[in-house]
Image 1 (cartoon, rainbow, N blue to C red):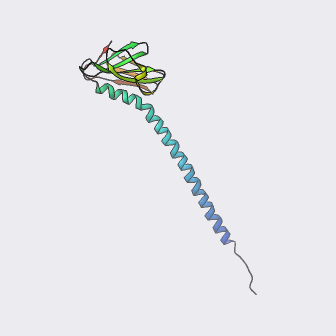
Image 2: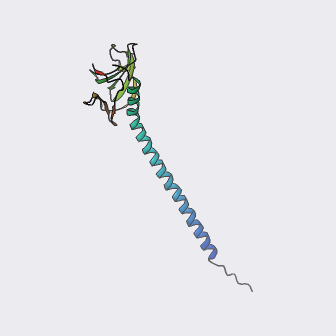
Image 3: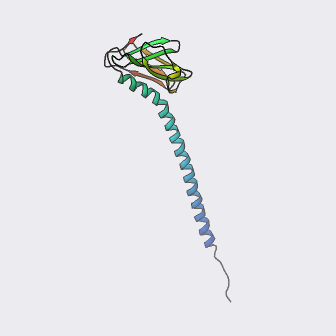
Length: 155
């Protein structure tokens, strides 16, 4: 007579394999969630810095004699980046919670309806510091730019 004596070793092996498989899936799940949160934070940081980087680059691009100026209008501070001797300029200012930019004649009135939105900000200021630096401030922070052409003017 043969006795049917099953060993619990088979069940033990399947249980250990299932435990390792569940641990692997949890590790993948938590790792993917952590990676997603890290990338979302990095994207938010890049979007925050993009506005200041754009302004810094635009100021450097307009760095010619008396091409960069600051004036006040009914919309607040306006940063004017002249386009050489053409009489046209990029004008950057805040309108309805957004930083906007328009390219038009330097002496033309501001038309926010036709301006391009650069990004959302509740704060925008541009000022010349005592060190002849142009400091531009938005919600994302401040950037200071030294013009190689010797500075601009306050209009």
